[in-house]
Image (tube, rainbow, N blue to C red):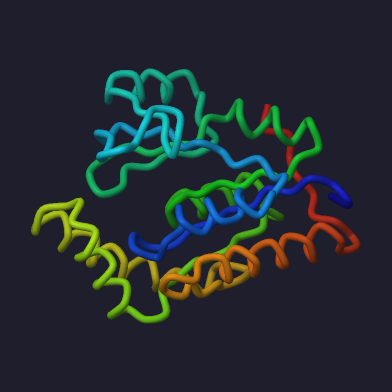
Length: 200
C-alpha cells in the first residue's frame, strides 16, 4: 500500500451483494482490514460467530453502546448493527486500510466522524434484479421482505452522497471487487492524501 491508510465505507441495499463482493476481494488477496460488524440479529444458516458478523444479544449490544465501544451503530430492519471501534483503531495504527461494510445511516455517521473517509455505494444492475435477489435467497418472511424492499428504495436515494458507485453484476462479483480495489488504489496514491482523525 502507498500513502497513509484510509477508511473505506462500503454500503448498499440488501440484495446488492456486498458480502459476496467483499469476499471476492479477500480471495483476490486484498491486504486491507475488513471489519466484522456486530449485530443483535440471529445467525442465518451456515453463519458462524466472528465470520461475517459478531452475534450479540440485545443486552450485550446495549452494554457496548453505553460503553461507547462502537465507531457507529444503528437499528436496521429491526435489529442492531455496529462497528466495534477497537478494530478500526488497531488496523489504522498498523498502517492498514480499513473497510467498513455498513448501511447508509452508518455511512452518514462515519462521514461526520471522518469527513475524508472514502464512501463507495454498491448496487445491483437494476431494482428489478435487486428484488429478484432478495426474493430468491428466501431468508425473510413476506413482511420482512417487504420491509427490506421498502428500505432499499430509501437507501438508493442516498446514492448521490457517496464518492463512487459500483455496479455488482449478477454472477460476476469479481468485477465489482476489482472496481473497488482500483478505486482504493487510486485514492491511496492521490496527493494530498485523505486524512484520518484519531478515533481514540
